[in-house]
Image 1 (spheres, each protein chain N blue to C red):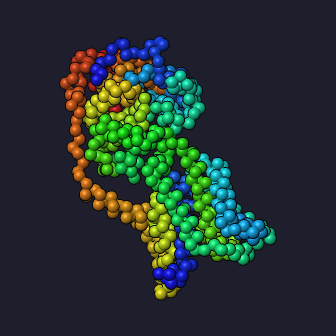
Image 2 (cartoon, each protein chain N blue to C red):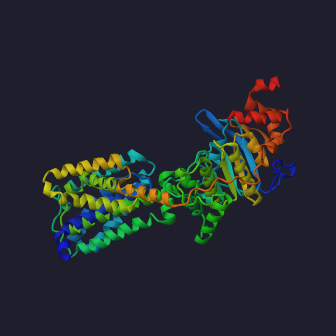
Image 3 (cartoon, rainbow over the protein chains, first blue to last red):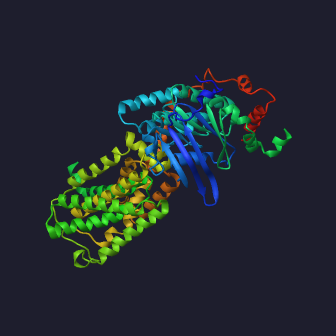
Length: 257
Length: 322
């Protein structure tokens, strides 16, 4: 189990192997620069976070990484190979899974079938069944298998989403606001789950604007504002960064303090 | 039984044709493709198979096979051209495609028999052959609803973006939908000509779309069971209601309206809701949500940043910013 406060040693530096790399990625919608020149490199097996106020471009960046939105410029590189032009469906084959900002479960399928949909992305039936069982166990969904999504609480639905992504057997998991709309206890639960997964070697990129959640969970944090990276480093340092505080709270608060 | 079958043979034939035609609209619909191209392919295949038998002396099975392969190819090409369209726009384009086929056969000269059509397509094709082919089509549709294929089709329809993040090549599925629609429509058309021996422009028009849609609206859009249910009801009801004379069209119309208003997922959907209700009442209640033992409690959270530091303020206020 990782501790909530990361050490400097967890920072990726120089020649460390990277699983995902972004070089000067930008997404413009007409004149609106939702993401404007973001570069980052993620080492395998760590939890990375992207924080930033609403509208800072976090979700757009995730959409660009998963190829659901076309990047206006820049390179997306997975395991050293650029994939900026490839179809979004190949990412699943290469071990990248994601969850969405809103719950997107298939209402006609049971919890088990929804999770199986993730395992379907793998080859081999036998391993599928194991992957589903493991994902259910990891997300503590035992007993919910035969329920339909609309019978579950919001927090449980979100865990089903994470289970579905886990069943894909990813090496990198992208989570877009996994705790949005959750209460404190549910958040703590998700945070603990993500750290458990990290202990098993699963790298994650987590998007949140809940700073406390990020400090509890991440090894390394990127802060975004207005489409650009304004700070990065261990979470405790990043939240103390004046630029980050200004982005969240405004300039006046900072001057008053 | 045999006597009953013989006296109702025409209805059995009608059910098979209507069922396969309905599947040609329902199968793509299950993959989120709202296309009526199956009706146009019905027309292409009906004429093509008639011409193959009349002019080339094909056996009925060779004619059917050739026509189905051709209409599957037509479906695929159409799919490549219009696959970026969705919803009503897609439906309108495929509707136009059906109308074009109608215009082409009227103006086809001797080869298509103009507005009279073609007749005298006499073969050894029987109702039994038809039942086997229809059963094969239904089996293919049923297999696409099971297991991995069924889940993936569900994902492609409900949430294409999610589907692609699950490694599903959505546009490939949509092309399969167009191709299947062409093949099924083609099968229905070719079987019709082989059994009825004639084909005319009035047989391949707008009423095919109405028939196919009515069947899946009444029966259910999400499963082959709905198509079977709808095909049987729509084909057999008018003859069952002959005792009330011309009122039978009224009953038919009222039933369709009621189904589309109150049973958005058709009769099969109603049955499915009943099954779900029963399952809910039988199974064990939901387990109580268990908090993980290692969840940080409130005190350890606050201890992360020393009180009074800007970091702590940012953390506390940051949550409020949401």
